[in-house]
Length: 349
Image 1: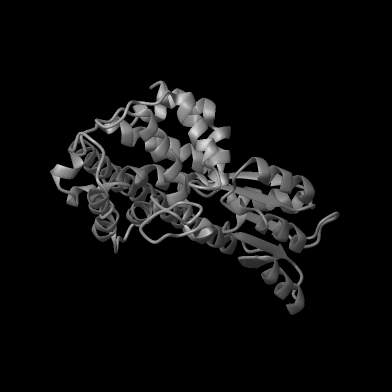
Image 2: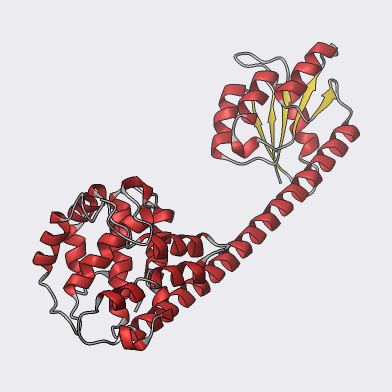
């Protein structure tokens, strides 16, 4: 354990250092200048500090206050060794953060006992801190493992829905990746963008409740069939409602709002503008864009530049203008996704 002694008296400094140095497994350093001692403490971590009260340039209270202001010395024991007996001086030292006091002239046995006890306290403190860090690491690892399992279930479920819809998992991967780019372009924080990225694949989970006759129909749907198809939004909301995790709650919001339109002509609630949750507005752009670029039994796949133009033309009508602006700003990355070269698609495959 490392002990620092700070005293402007060479004889006092040598006496204290020699007595403390007799203790087992203790390394002692000495410093005559309290200002220099504060610099030394920034460079090295000491486990106990013994400091005089009256010193030039900086007294003991000021020295203690300076150390207590740093995180490294917030809990390190600091003992003031002084010949001053006035209560107000001791109270000031306590307010500054002194752990204990020793009187000058000091008793050799008492000094060693105090130092030994305080170093034992410091050692226990360090062991407790190490244990806390170990437990925090274990909790973080367990939380990460749970999140990874949750994400895996999300992706596999979303792919199952895509296959039932007659497509492949590539659509949900691209929608997720494009949604994250738009979220980042809007300035959402990294964690929220990640949640949207992971929740987006469940945007059409309600299609599991739609009959194969409608899902697999090779041509366009009639008005009555379209009405039945639109029920997938309600099915999705009921499947995902009441979730306890941020991911499932975000997925429920997206499932229920990604068919709403900025001008209020969407479904199921006819929401308008900012009434539509931002998650739904983001996924609406990503979903429609990739759907336009994908071949379906009832339509050809649009070239990406034509699909891009359609998204831009629908700004302020179908789509939130801010989301379209973010889509345009991220266009080089989106092109990479559509070409299958973006790592954010590959990581889900």
